[in-house]
Length: 85
Image 1 (cartoon, rainbow, N blue to C red):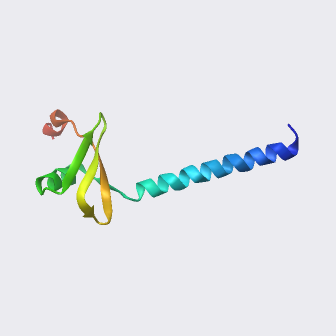
Image 2 (tube, rainbow, N blue to C red):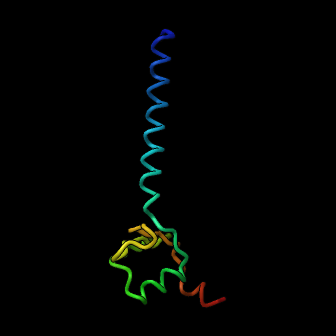
Image 3 (cartoon, rainbow, N blue to C red):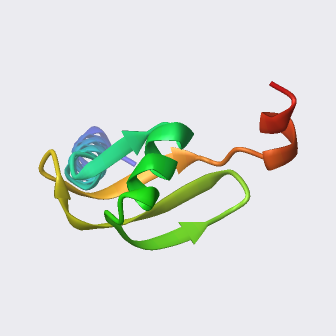
């Protein structure tokens, strides 16, 4: 590969990285990071519309935006481990 093609590939990879970083920033600015306690309080108040529970996280959507954010993410807490404290 000559120098001209190497430079073009470098610019392409840089542009691809910057595009990915921008999309990640756009996606995360609408997500509220909640503690488990805050999440359970909002569930009790009826502010949560939907929830998805995975092995390590609880994520979902608010019924109405909270602090301008319509989505939330919280770390999942094992009930047995929480009871120990």
